[in-house]
Length: 373
Image (tube, rainbow, N blue to C red; front, side, top):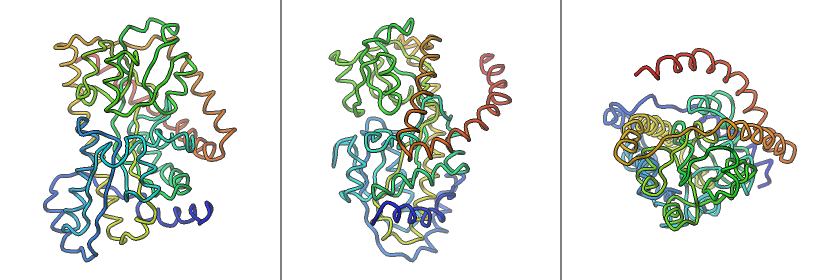
């Protein structure tokens, strides 16, 4: 099927699932009974591969939670088997496995694949972009999800935003960053558009899967790395080697992971199962973000008090130059890539409305109240 036909398909099939949400996971047994009594579909077996190893249990566990909830809500008729990074394909080849039909679906991050189309970055996060609430609002209320589905349709994939981690940290550095000059020549693991921006600031960029980061940091192949935030980063042990933990993660203020479904598998899935899958994705996102917000403060306190980690802010000249280069890059890509331009126009229009609002009431409250505790 040609790209145009695929994109028409996305617009038609997205209507029933784009707005599906679940407000919480309370009374899951009760809701499962209600769902089970209404399920009359066939038995379906899917395999899911992920970009995340079991050691980062919040992200890898999201797919397990999804499989469990889908099974509950279909009375075991829709069975999903989850494979961690490396069990079927390497962490950064999930999209290829989904596209080829090696697996029916994958849990990954869209920005790992910007080499295929730079517009995929919007599926994860854009430097100086949205926080978690803004990202979800743009995707579900501002048309972002459907725009991303158009791009993914060119690869035979049905796309869903999945888990949002909340604002991420700016990474672990062996040595403190005193100014922009200290970034020049530094070797850092950092993917997505952030890697492009960091390279413009003089950083030598590497893209590594989670399981490969610690060994690279330990043997000195990289000088710095970013991953997610305190909870996940402690699991990977970065604090054992690098003690300087920087904020803010200006490239990922509210990133979403992606749930990519092979389009043939999606075509074959009964409508009722599609709705159940969409609802379960929303539920798992809500629960996972709440877990991050609950765990990160406790873990950060432990990293600082028990492991001697120093939380530092990026110097202002780093942030200013990163802001400038980020905006330049967005305009360059908009000129070079029609897909990027189409999504950027939607994203930027939403940003122009959302940022002033959050800079007002939300930000003023936080600036006053948060430091007082």
